Amino acid sequence: MLILPPEQATVHAQTRDYVFALAAVVGGLVLRYLLNPILGHQGPYLILTLPVVLAAFYGGFGPALFATLLGTSVGTYLFIGRGAGLQEILQPENIGRTVLFFIIGLSIGAIGGRLRASRYALAEKVRQLRASNRAKDNAMTTLGHEIKNPLSALYSAQQILKRCPDDGKRVLWASDVIERQVSQMTRMANDLLDLSEGIRGEMLKNPQRVALQQVLEQALEQSGPLIAKKGHRLSSDLGPGQVEVLGDGTRLVQVFANLLNNAAKYTNPGGELMLSLQLTEPGTVSVTVRDNGIGMEPGSIDDMFEPFVQAPGAASNQEGGLGLGLAVVKKIVEIHGGQVSARSAGPGQGSSLTVRLPLAPSNT
Image 1: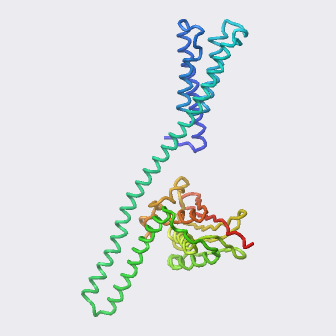
Image 2 (image 1 turned 180 degrees about the horizontal axis):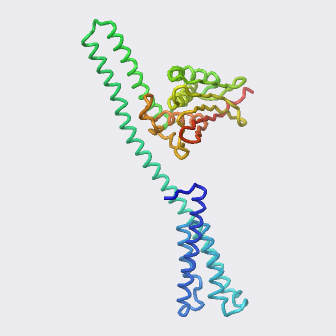
Image 3 (image 1 turned 180 degrees about the vertical axis):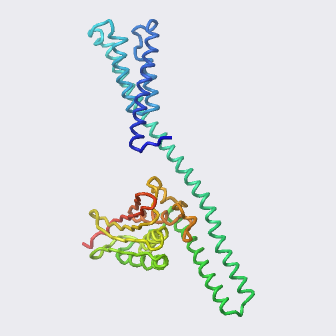
């Protein structure tokens, strides 16, 4: 099966819609011609309304307007002007019929265009709901595995403490296991709570002026252990001078720590990470996290910000979670009046995620 690029597919669909409109008008003209012995000059455009309706339903306003113009010109020639002179065509009665048909055609086209847009919007919403349901099903499976593994480790540690309460080395080992697994389960619980709070818009209650460079430094501190564990090389450019935004500093640290952890998680050991801050537009600051990791399919980039969606290979990644990190990032950034976007040239080509935030008003 041949898959066309999006631009070619759009042109192909538009051409198909206009061809359909042409075929519908031809069919209407043939039918009107066959009924001409009965109808004569009565209702020259009545049957031609049906092709306009069909063109509007399948193609929208453009094909409907094309069908209206074609039906008006050809219908006028065949059923009013043929065998008569220009004086016959310009009679008030015929002019009124033509104008009325043209107005009806425009109205049908406008209504059909709205209906077609509504159909596409509904189909897209259904697609998103189905994708969300599949993601939730996958998340439930992932959540089961993610909870099962810490619980198994906790049970093993509990058995060690129960059997060897006086063995210092084993007690220390069991304590380390309990600390790690409780930390992992706490992280999952926090992600779920953060997403819930973000959906309800409850995360930004007391905004304050926040120095963005300090936020990024704290995010680097939080992500440092994972970056060091995987042996990545990190470079950063936090820009000259202090940049301030209005918001919740703790939540913003969470945003950039999530982005840095995400880049480190899906980049093979020894990879390259880059954190940069730039003043790109008046009143806006951009922070970008780049990596040379596994990358993303261009068609799946938008889905990565949906809840419970994980990058390909996440299941085999020991650092994988519930797929909530980027969804939480998006909610926090939007509550701060900003936007987050992602780019990738494709699988294996790395990724870049950019957060844009409005600058805090000046002290003046």
